[in-house]
Amino acid sequence: MGTLSKRELAALVDEATVDTYDEYEQMTALFAAVEENLAVPFSTVVLGVEVTVRGVDLSRDGRIVARCTREGFRQTIGLLDLPLPDPAPDGAEWVEAYRHYWAQ
Image 1 (cartoon, helix red, strand yellow):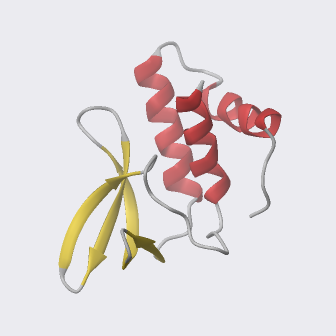
Image 2: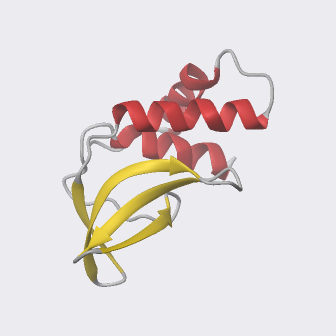
């Protein structure tokens, strides 16, 4: 994944949220875009430990979280905090668009 400009990230956010009316609908739309486009599973390193990202979920508090596993253990990690591997998986631009949305 090449680095996208703020303008390109804003365009992705606009594409996902075009028909939304409030923050809840925007988050749901961004979640759908990430879920549909992010190629899983993929491996990444979290706090020095390799984990496998199996998918994404929308948490009860409205955050997008990654479902991670390692040796039979499962944990969710906020997508804002999840380091992406290099090279990033297909669809990672939607993770960056989500991060851009929250940075605004």
